[in-house]
Length: 153
Length: 153
Length: 153
Length: 153
Image 1 (cartoon, rainbow over the protein chains, first blue to last red):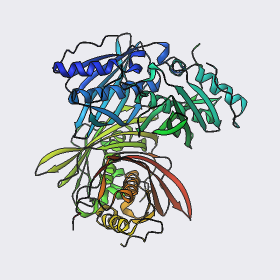
Image 2 (tube, chains in turn cyan, yellow, orange, green):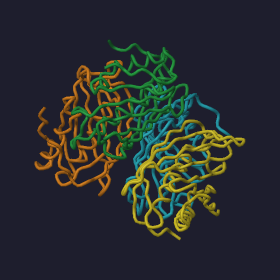
Image 3 (spheres, chains in turn red, cyan, brown, orange):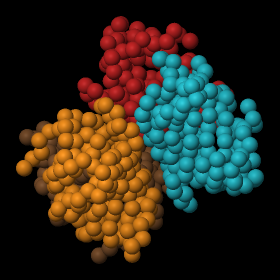
Image 4 (cartoon, rainbow over the protein chains, first blue to last red):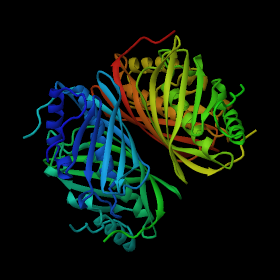
């Protein structure tokens, strides 16, 4: 999987660092997730429907919805922190407001408040069916800022 | 994957329904997750380390930790609801208290309060390294009770 | 305390029911809280600085900020439910993003998704100092819909 | 109001600092809240029923339940941090699992994980009616550690 090219005004060195980090997340790669840098403090992640993301009724699994929202909020924060720093998830809370029914899951992450040590971010998750987006989850999250660590090979 | 046999006093028809539901969760199967029914209102889920569950530093991904905790709380509730009813996740909140470093991730779910329409559950997630369990996350969750739906084939 | 008159298109019977309910909340009355119905699914609550709302540094107490946000989300939902139904808080999660420093605390509640049994709402809380509003908290909440109960005298 | 004397092994200088901080929380004093230091990392706060803590049905207000839980978790953390340091609430999440019906509200706070910068704590809140405690809320919280600041006079 090749991460999407940024279409919004995120500096090149930031974009490279963010995409490189994302490409090293085995969990996102296993789901063929694609990252789009929307703007500083905003990203979008898309995952196609497949067996590996389903719950018992064949819908997107609530845990997958949560994982995607968590990543979207975290990478939204990373667009403001990288390349020198990055963030770890301290906690997140997600409301599933509709079943994740559709062919694609889209999580849009956004930074609400960027502090020195903590970043508060959020994400909205949409399920796309027949080209129509339907809101299926709302997430709120606290991230902890750390110096950037080398990723694994 | 074959779900573990229950070792605790969960009735056979409940155990069958819970294991059948779990075995139809593509997300859990993709990670080779194993469910153990500990007791009424309590379950354990284990997932081995593998590329598909990692974040950029090679640890268990926060979203995977959340997904496992969400499933553990949900199936803990299902041991009290199935076979006639089941539950959907309304929301969950998880604190990651340590990096998920190790060879196995264990989520232990437990029901705190079982109401008629809503169940409040929780889970603790441990990362096991060299045989030593270390707490890595604490989750609190609200589940919505529904009549049991047929799962997908 | 007399609740403010609604300035937005909330039906009169809804407005009367909401204001009557709010006026029976001893906790809100003790803080001289004022409710403003902004629109269907949206309310604002204001509380003036006073000893009874402070923490140890003389700022608005985090618990007060949470209580106000909880009420704002709940009454935002009530504008869609009353007069026949009302809601109880199932849970809420709040991030305090800045200290509550100022002379007035404003919580603006908004419904994100109104289901038959559950309503998901949110609130933003601002502290006003020298006429300038500063975001101090973001709240996300799940409410449970019930038939309307008579309030206490 | 005089804070209760600690009955558990909390060092005297810690106990003094914690009680002094609590006594400066106008919000807790206005409700005649009493703090009991149970042990290192554990406290209890009690509030008697009164008009200033009610919602529209005359029960303990959900926001008051949240405020008490928030304080209980925070002071549980402070028993490990004071006198040199203290904590601010970064965020909390609370499930109301039963109406707050009774003559006394008791919040018991406990530290789950004390890190260098962040502390994760929780609280259980009980309503006492006719001498019987009933669980009414469960709270999970993230606190941010800071050097101790002087309180207001």
